[in-house]
Amino acid sequence: MNTEPPIPHLFRTEYRKIVSVLCRHFGFREIEVAEDIASDTFLVATQAWGIEGPPPNPAGWLYNTAKNKAKNYLHRHSIYEERVLPEVRAGLGEEQAFEIDLTPENITDSQLQMLFAVCHPAISEESQVGLALRVLCGFGIQEIADAFLTTKEVINKRLTRARERLREVDIRIEMPAPAEMDARLGPVLTTLYLLFNEGYYSMSQDHTLRKDVCLEAIRLCTMLIENNATNKPQVNALMAMMCFHASRFDARTDASGALVLYEEQDPSLWNADLIRNGYIFLQSAARGEQVSRYHLEAGIAYWHTQKEDTSEKWSSIVYYYDQLLKLSYSPVAALNRAFALSKWKGKAEAIRETEALALEGNHFYFALLGELYDGIDRQKALENLDNALRLARTAADQQAIRKRILALS
Image (cartoon, rainbow, N blue to C red; front, top):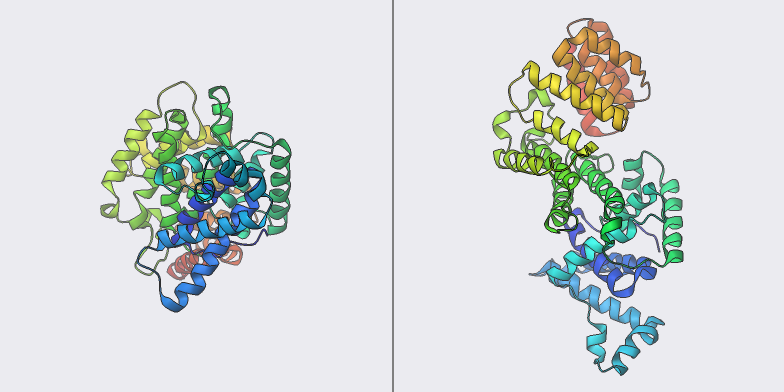
């Protein structure tokens, strides 16, 4: 069907669980069937609950509805003759052969196995991440396109080719062998990283912060840490980064939901428990000799949880950004480095480095120049902020930029 799943963010966790278990039950060749059954389950829920209100146990209602739809599908299609009847003849009753296991243990196993199944080296890493975001994270096509900074058409074609390729190689839904684990873990971590970023700075839903999406990324990363085969240094580094960023959630938006810039945040609202947990995971990430981008980003996030504006803080952040840009260049990282440089070396040097980036189509570029020119050249500050406002895509960003323009005016 390849339609957008009609599910609110509140129930995306249940959507992911249902798709994972159904794929494990049916086999990967029926991945689109699993998506359609899960999507249809939420469509029925939307219609029924809109009239009668939600049931006392919404998750249980969703699971039972999905099970019944799966049974109906099995009856109507060749899977019944290929899988169910042989099991019945082997001594299982028909109900047992139909049984879909939605226990917490099987859900956890299914989600881990599906993460690695869709992140298979037979398809490109971009396709692996996109398919995982779609199937296991419940992202809509537009959300995936925003995450990759491309169009819905490109994503649709990419996912279609990925599904076809994975059917051709007929992959099994299981954990990789130890020798394959490190190579297969990379795209899984990229998926969780993008999932967290989509919640931390949402483009598609016009929200400044979607905590439920961030917490889902943390939950999936926790599953990797709790599994001995996947409890690797880079996984702990990613978890540390998430904890450090999550610690500042309550300070990052005001009562109206508007974005609060880092310099204006109230440190008393930062979550000390999450900062401590992040530090523990960061210590665990220090095992081994490899330094991943997650180690570097965790280091940057750690220093942002230190309240005092010291030279050590900002010089450390600049150092981590230098290493990150060597490892994996991105315009956002380059701009963030320029901001940190302004705090360490002053605005004049930061302006020179920022303008050398020449990111004319990026509203963050002009927003940063607007901040840097504040106190140096008011007219240039306003011109840059006007350009930033013209390019900004979300209401939250536009509101923050208008606030700065009003302050300067």
